[in-house]
Image (cartoon, rainbow, N blue to C red; front, side, top):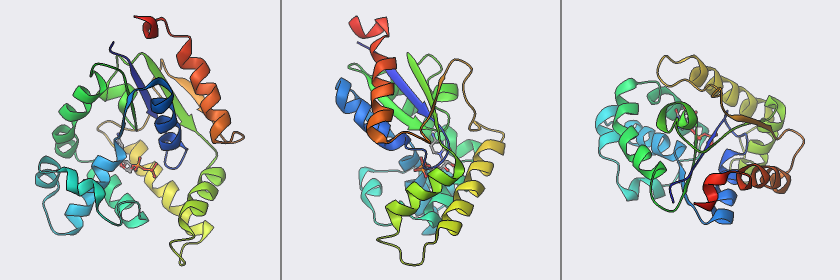
Length: 205
Ligand code: CDP
């Protein structure tokens, strides 16, 4: 069975948590595509050329320290605006999406560019304040210098760059379902998403 669940949306909207839980529920493979851009950005911070860094990604690059920091996130959003960087990463993502057994991918352009034929497309959002509070709660134990205001500013800057870029901008696909998680916790968001996916006839083939 080939079945793709594409999950897109702005930073810290809960896409990763939802995507991972959906993959586990349905027994599908899961790919955090943001990690491809973060791992590339980490190598660029080491001095590599962005396109060369994207082409040379290896499994070790995904386990390095610091991939989740705001600095690497900002770097990721800058190199993610480069068409040649995106082109270097597209083939891997497209093959992953259409593998046998089902796949869940989360990112910014999964339903629009990577897999327009995805069986299910979700666009996951939450208010800026809720997203900032979630990310702040996530990082404040590790990062004593973080403040809620700085986290909010970081997310807004990144969202604007991701929305405004010419190549594969973050945009809700016309045929996607909007899931606003502002007033939902992780398990409520998962229950809604499962209910949407479970209705799809393609699951039975
Ligand atoms: O976890 P968070 O939502 O903060 O970000 P992420 O999913 O790890 O993505 C980091 C950055 O990578 C984003 O701000 C985007 O610029 C870029 N990205 C992208 O352009 N396309 C994707 N499919 C995934 C991430």
